[in-house]
Image (tube, rainbow, N blue to C red; front, side, top):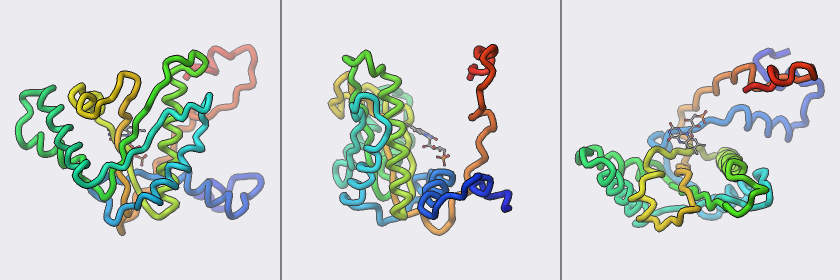
Length: 217
Ligand SMILES: Cc1cc2nc3c(=O)[nH]c(=O)nc-3n(C[C@H](O)[C@H](O)[C@H](O)COP(=O)(O)O)c2cc1C
């Protein structure tokens, strides 16, 4: 048995399709925008990524996420709006920092803004559950991108909460900007294998007298 292969320990070896899905999940890595190469995906490929994202587990079917490809002059305008919002928040930010802020939005072949239109009128689907669905959608988007030969990363930073940026985008109070997905070709240097997750992320709970100690995070 290959002890370095996590699938080797399974009691029933998965079929090739299942094994491929598991390996994609186990091996997914983010790639920083400055390492991503052109060409980025086109709108049809991005639409398929968004379709895959829409399979996120989603309480109430609210779909509390929107993907928006921001390109061309709109992308430059978004970078300028991020720099303006930073300058408004931090008057000490000098020209170099503002330029870096613009460059962050410009880096990488393709930029997709992730918006989160929350529905506060659904007590049956509290806001953390809506955010949880959006997180799952982001993973689906990234996995679909990898399956199509791309790589990418989800990044937010303080910029997504800056009032100046929210105002420039005209976001109503119930809509949050989760951040930006940058997608492109992964380049020739393969991303490092992901670190092994801590063992305590999964445990079996079978002692009914010790629930409070076993179920602590
Ligand atoms: C909503 C969201 C926002 C994120 N924002 C940042 C960020 O601003 N900066 C950062 O270094 N990582 C951020 N991350 C984490 C990265 O996307 C990535 O997961 C991390 O760099 C670890 O790399 P890995 O995905 O290959 O494990 C964010 C993730 C999510 C889901």
